[in-house]
Structures are given as C-alpha cells and as structure tokens.
Image 1 (tube, one colour):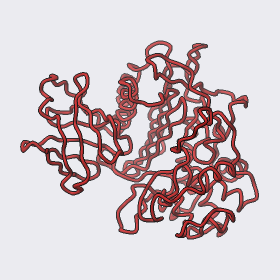
Image 2: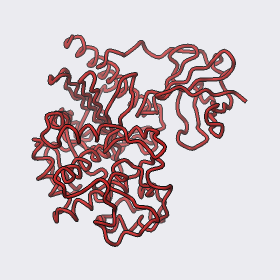
Image 3: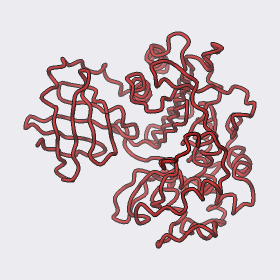
Image 4: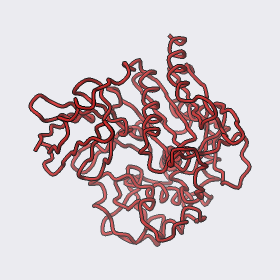
Amino acid sequence: MHTLLYLLLDSLISLHFQGNVPGMAVLVAQKGQVLFEKAYGSANIELETPLEPSMAFKIGSVTKQFTAVGILRLVDQGRVHLSDTIQQYIKGFPSKGYPITIENLLTHTSGIVDYMSLDDPDPYIERRDFTPEQIIHYFQDRPLLFRPGFTFSYSNSNYTLLGYIIQKVTGMPYHLYMTDSVLKPAGLTHTGFATEQDVLPGRVEGYSRDKGYYQNADYQSMTLAYAAGDLYSTVEDLYRWNCALLEGKLLPPSLLQKAWTAHRLADSSSTHYGYGWYDNLLYGVRCIHHEGQINGFIAEVKYFPGEDLYVCTLTNLRSGEDRTTFSEGRFRLMENIALAALGKLGPPPASLPSGAIDRFIGSYRCVEKPKLVLKIYKENGRLYADLSNGTGRHMVLEPETATRFVLPDVLNVRTTIEFTPDGGLIATQDKPYVFKKF
C-alpha cells in the first residue's frame, strides 16, 4: 500500500514541476508512520537550487494555531481565562459596547475588523516595520462589524491581539515566549521567527506569477503579520508539531479537543472553526486544518482524525490575486494530494464541449436564503460562479460529470454544484442548498 501510494503521489506531483520552477514540499503520514516525504522544483530559481523537504517556508496563517496553543497554555496554567475580556490585559483598548473575550478572539467571533483588509493611502505600507502596539492602534477605533459571538468573520486582528496579550501576561516578548514555551517543548528545531534581514539556513525564496512569468515575491515586513502569520517551518517540523499535540506535550487532551472542535455561535450554528484550526468535513470526512498565504508562499496542513492521517503541503509560489489558470492548478494539486492520501482520488475531471454548458448559464436564487443569488457565467469555454454576498468571486467550476461540478477555489471544504433536471441546481458545502433559476 505504501509503495502504491508513493508511486501515485510521485506521478501526480512531478507532472507539475518540470524544470527550474518554484516548488513544493509534501509530507503524508498515518498512524505515526511517514508514508511520503519529497520535495519538487526549486528553492531558488535564480540559483537553480533544488528544493529539499528539510527547507524552511513561510507558513502565513498556519501560525495562528501556534499562537492559539500559546494562549491555551496560559489558560491551562490559570493565568488566563477564556471568558476574560481584552480590556483586562490591554487597558487602553476602547470599549465596544459589548464584552469581547479571549474566546471571541480565538474563534474569530469578536466582530473586530481585519486590519489586513483595510485600505490605506500608503502604497508601501506592507514594506514598513510595525510594533504590535502600532498595529493595534491602526484598527482599535474602528466600529465592530457585528455583536461579538453572533457571527464568524476571519480576522487577523484577533490573533494580533492574542499575541500582544501573551506579552502582557508573561512579561516576555511574544516571539521569546513562543520559542521557549511552545516551539521547544514541541521539539521543533526548524520552526521559528525570522525577518528578511536574518540569515536563515535553508530558507526558501518566494515567487509570484501574476504576469504569466515568475517574479520574486513583493517584499512584506514580517512585523505586519506578527502573531497572525510570521512563522517559518518545514513539512517535517509541522508533522512533528501535530504529533506533539496528540501526545499531550503542550495541552491536556480535553483542551486540545476544545481547540479542535468547531465553535458555535449564539444561535447554536457552527462556525466550522475552533481555536486556530478549522473543523469541518473535507472530501466527506472530518478534517482539522488550516491554510496560510503570505507573499510568495502557500501552506496547507490537514489532519483527518478518524483516519489518523496527516497531510502537509508547502509551496514557494503565491500570486497576488490567485485567479490565473496556473494558480487554479496549484490549488487543485493540493486538494488531489489529500484525496490520494485518503484513497479518494477519482479519475481526471470530465471534459465537456463548450456548447454543452451553455444551458447552465444564468442567475439562481437560494431557496433557504432568498437574498443569496448565485450567478453562473462562461469565460473562455469554462463556467464560473459569483455569489451575491461577496464571499465568492470568479470561482471556476470543474466538471466531474455532465451535470456535477466541483469548485476547487473553495479550499476549506469540498464544494460541488449539481445542475438538476428542473433547471435549478444544488450547491453542497457540508450540506445541500437548493437554488432555483430565475
């Protein structure tokens, strides 16, 4: 089985990395045994340096699970409580009319605006260095987007605040506390925090492909990402991290399970997000996972607890908009790696004549949520979808059959659209939603 899986993954991945191109490191492990570990492409295309699995990538928002564990270790020690408010630790943080708790920050239910989404007149703001206090000051006076606990909205601001609260509680700089109290106890030797100026052995260069050819990724100060996304790591260390969590080296099992369990809102609906991890169905099975994107890099970590299966993919290519056919192919490859590891990789996508899909073009209204409209349209012989609420734009539809399509742009959960004989469609994302054409 291991040999067959190795051959399947190697043939699947190697097709995408011919010649001197930005690469990908992949690790698949199950029940404590590494089944596949290999790197493809180049760590530096200018020097034609082959990529190796032991090399270090920026991991972006995968950092959030580390910050979450940093806070939860303080919770376990009784130094912080999930019900504590921001103002108990950050005295100057403005009152928003509602208490905003540590748990609200961990679960992205605080209502605090994401500072990464704010428009700024300075075109070079990402190049500048910031202190945590300066970042917090940048967004702290903005009004809440919603009442805390009533809606989920992913926000980097939440984890910046958590990092700063760690500093306030411990009296140590965030990076020093994380290194001493989280990374070292986990046994991580190739994970840490580094600026662009630091000399880091095995550091991988990041690239973009916005213009149809490779370029060095735009410079971004890592101080801007801070506790929400400034770690680097390797596929080996990220697997070691998952093992350390399961072995109870960092948190008691009860607290880890709470972190790995989707939080519920005031109306009892699921957020599909725990404390630093997503928790939902991927490919029909439960998955604890997170993605990280930062200039030049994409990281994906997926743990399937029922199968005790871990899949990690790191790549040193991330285009700014990620709307090119090339980028779609990279994301689809990451999905197919996990499907292959699960034994669920089916045949290649069906090929449909351009004219066969014209009947699907139009606007569809959701029966369960009448304000939600899905627009299906065609560009260059392919179907795309837009959601009226802005949560999905220019999402490509890849045919699986003559009537069923998968949306590979939706990364956190497998999403399909099935066009029905009555002229409507069923969109499935954890559960089915019926849409009628109008």
